[in-house]
Picture (cartoon, rainbow, N blue to C red):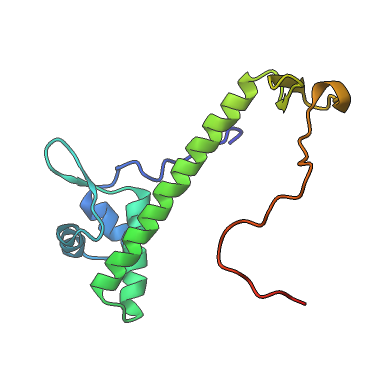
Length: 156
C-alpha cells in the first residue's frame, strides 16, 4: 500500500450486532447505554443505530471502567469530558489551520511604530529605525508620584 489512507474514526458504519461483537458486549447492553446517553450512536433514516470506530473504543472503555468498579454516572461524566476534550482538540486544529492560511496570505510580517508626528509608521520586519527622526520616546521631566492606593510600609 503506497498511499496513506486516513480512517475516519467518526464515520457511523457498524450495525449494532457488529459494534457489540467488536466491543465484546451483548447488543442489549449497547441499547441500554444508548438509552442512558452513555454511548449514543448515529441513526440511519430508518432509525437503525450506526456505530463508529470511536463509539466501539468508548464501549471498550466503558467495559474497562465498569470492571474496575466505577459506576455508570462516573463513567458517563468521564466520557462527557473526553468528548469535550476531543471537540476542543478539533477546534484548536481548525483554528491553527485558519491562522496558518491567514499568515500565508500575508506578504511578510509588519511592525508598527509611532512616527515623530504621532502617526503610525509601518516597518518591515528587520528594518532599523533612526530614533532621532522616526520615533518619539516619551520621558517625563519629573518623576511621577506613586499611584494612589493603600500605603505600604517602607523598607527603611
